Image: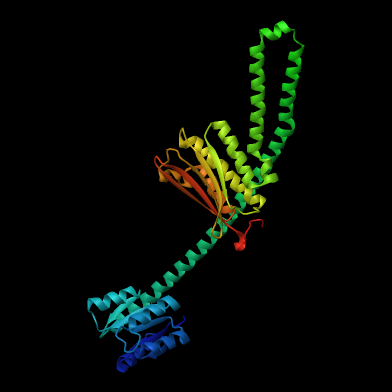
Length: 369
C-alpha cells in the first residue's frame, strides 16, 4: 500500500518534530517540514505532497489560510489546519479556504490519524467525482456535436428534397396549369357568341381561379426553394419573401438592409432565409391582426445580424423558449449550425422580435467562406 506523503507547515519546532514522529509511527511519509509560509510554498511546488498539515497562525508574508488557498486553487492538495486559535473570525477565514478538517492543539494521536484519513478519503472521492464529471461533460459535448452534425445533414437533405419538389412544380405542374389556362381560353373562343354572352360571368370566375392556382403554385415553389436566393443573394430573397408574405396575408412587411456583408455563403444564406420564413409563420399564428412586420439585415461588431420584428400582441417570454415549440427550436438549431445565436424578445401588447447574430469567419469583412 502506497504511503501518503504529508507536508508539515508549523513554526514551532517542538510541535513539528512531535508531529513527524507520530506520522511516521502511523505509516505516513514526511514530505518535508516548513516553518513559514514562503518555505511552505517552495516545498509545495517542489514536493507536491498528498496532504498538508498547516498551522493557521504562521509568521511572515503568508499565513496558514493563504497557504491553504494556494494549495487548493493551484495544486488541488488537501489541507488540514492545526490551530490553537478558536476565535470566530479566524475560523471563518479558515473555512473559506476549503480545508478538509481542523485539529486543535494540543492534539491526540488517534484524532490526528482519523482526521488525516478522512481528509485523504474525501479528497480522493472529490477527485474521482471531478474526473467523472469531466468525462461525462466530454461525452455530452461529443454527443452534442454528433447530434448537431446529424441535424445539419437532415437540413441539407431537406433542402435537396425541397429543391427537387420546387423544380417539379415549376417545370411540370406549373407548366401544365399554364397550358390548361391557355387551352381553356382557346376553347372558349370556339363557343358561339350566344353561349359566351350567357356564361361570361362563369368564364371569368374559372379563369380567375386558374390564375390563382398558377400563382399559388409559383408561391409554393418559391417557398420550397427560392431561386432568387441562388441568383441574387440573401437581401433580394428576403425582399421577395416579404412581398409574397404581404400579398398573401395583407400584412405590411418591409425589408431594411443596413451595410450587410457583400458576400454570404450559400449554406449560411439558406439557414437565415429559413429562419426568416419560420419567423413570418409565427407572425401569422401568434401576432394577431393589424400588424406590421420589419425584416432587418445589418452589420454588427464582429459579424452581422438578422432580425424579424412585428407590432403584434406579443407573448409571455416563458412560452417563447425553443423547447416549447418545434418552430422556435428549429430556428435555434439553424442559428447554432452557422455559429450564431438566437434571441427572442417579446412584450405583451408591444410585439415580438427574433434576432439572429452571426459572427463573420475570423473577423473578415464578408461571410463567403
